[in-house]
Amino acid sequence: MEYRITASQLRQKYFDFFTQRGHCRIASAPTVPDNDPTALFISAGMQPLVPYIMGQPHPAGRRLVNVQKCFRTSDIDQVGNTTHLTFFEMLGNWSLGAYFKREMIPWSWEFLTGKEGLALDPRRLYVTVFAGDDQVEKDRESVDLWREQFARAGIEAVEGERIFPLGRADNWWGPVGRTGPCGPDTEMFFDAGGVPCGSDCRPGCSCGKYVEIWNDVFMEYEKKADGTWGRLVQQTVDTGMGLARVLTMLNGLDSLYDIDTLRPLVDQIGRMSGRACERHARSFRIVADHANAACHLAADGVEPANIERGYVLRRLIRRAVVHARRLGIEQSIWAPLFERVRDGESEVYPELESRAGQILDALQGEEEQFERTLKEGLKRFEQVARRSEETIEGERAFDLFATYGFPLEMTQELAQERGLAVDAKAFQRAFARHQELSRRSAGQPRGAAHPSGLGDLSDHIPGALQ
Ligand SMILES: [Zn+2]
Image (tube, rainbow, N blue to C red; front, side, top):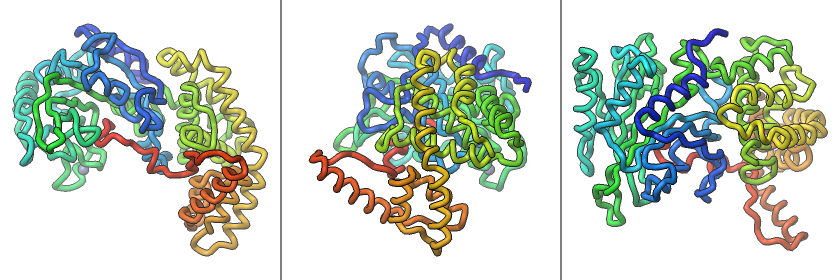
């Protein structure tokens, strides 16, 4: 496939643009947070930089630019369509008290429309700003700054037509806890063409006409313990641009899975299965996404386990294996798929290269272990499904987990395909009983094991950058 712009080229453009404006490029933090015990994974570009946004000096200075690896499972059920991924990359630039709206909005305009940036047609750009409410005033400064930018292209930017003031749900960030830094954001959208879905269709609508490409967050307030809002001494900017989404848009592709970092995985799955992606798109995409994510998590030192991060990785690997077998792939999928990931991305994430041995051991080891019980487990599942009406009992689902290594979510997915539900609460009770028994027999303190609880793993930061 010929690409107008590749992932590597887009990252480079972004880094060049901001390093020319005094920013220092910093490496991506690992997907496993080292400063945040409440989160299993980094799920937003700003998360590793929170301490610096809060005021701690950053060793690389006050102007930073990076690409951050992110992973989230909150949408994992939707992986398989054209628009969802568990692993994604966010481009971002950061001002730790160095500059604010007056610099950032013109730079956003230059990067989006200028030749050294993305050279987008300004007539297809739209923005949203914070409309204000009874607690915090409207972000008029951003409105004025955007008007000036559009005027440079001869466009009169009318509110409600070009600039959309929206409420707190759309254009407000933070605070992370009950108190702390927070502020309005301004989001940039590109009109992908096509007709509006209705009279309410506007930037922020989910119909796909307006693609969100960038988000500038302006931290200028501090929410205090008494519920009032003060002005921050150090104003900060953090921005987020989803690499895959913008590449898809710039290349005129229909699916995130067609970008140059993911397409080689899809093609490899095609070669291994001898089948066409078009006819088995969902399984192809699940294998591609989960394999990509599993490689990156393993590169950051996560190992398959029955709890926490390791359980998430285990689920990714096992689900990928189940879908690969469905596609008729009998061989191990990990060496060829890891090679595609490493070829495409070790330039920016060198841990894929330096930890190649450990990554392959973790992925292949898990596949081999699962392989021993998978066939029997599927047979057992079929028996259970045949005997179940509407709902598979929690005890049966737990047996599939304990005996055959079927994560609850996998049993739920298999059940759903047959129009059945799974009694997840009863599964959890059975799991807790099992835990209690093994704890007593081992004389250990209560562990944190949790074989499900996707809710625990979803984003813990409100309004996290998409
Ligand atoms: Zn719409």
